[in-house]
Length: 257
Image (cartoon, rainbow, N blue to C red; front, side, top):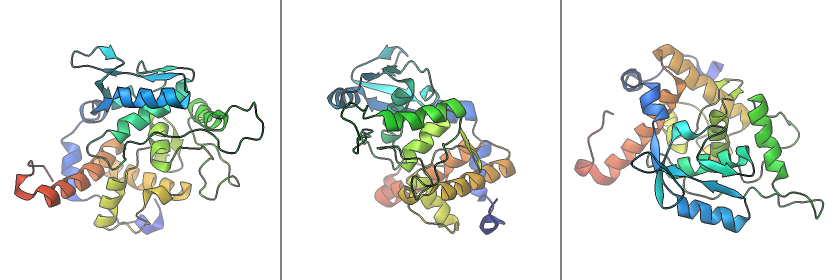
């Protein structure tokens, strides 16, 4: 753990919340309702030979309308992303899941993974992003290109910090701080509110800052004897509950926060 984080322990509310939840039920079964027509329409217009799918209330796989995607579906070889490239399909599935989540800050946004700086007319415009994604899948780590970008993240057009983190989690990748975890602005806002001394903007997170974040929530999980995914989920839902309380007051649904 970073020396700056020593002594920064999980709040009691986090401890109790995590101990009353399980990884399989509350993390892997975390489902969202996704507008498949919106996503597949954007995929068609962007020229990607990909289709996202989901499940209806009967658990059947569907390709149209609103359907459920669970966090457990975010994995290589999933039935819910079909087409030309498994890694690219998974990336868009991750984007659809996190962009449709009611408790997360990530907005629905179609990632433009095309390289805007092609050097040859016949160059594949998604080759640069694909190379990064395929490396992550193959090696379960982030490629090291220290001189490629100032942030320390690999140059993958259209893939921001939050989406990259979700993709890394989906392929079981690890970073210096531990197993890769999701990162959302709501979760970081809770950390800052609880006393974490760090830049509050997720979009500006460097690789080093992300590693520190992973190290912290992994340490919290070890202290609580739970999974880091549950700690991250508490951080996100804690801020979401604060916002709901501010917006709706006494009309807000009761929470355990």
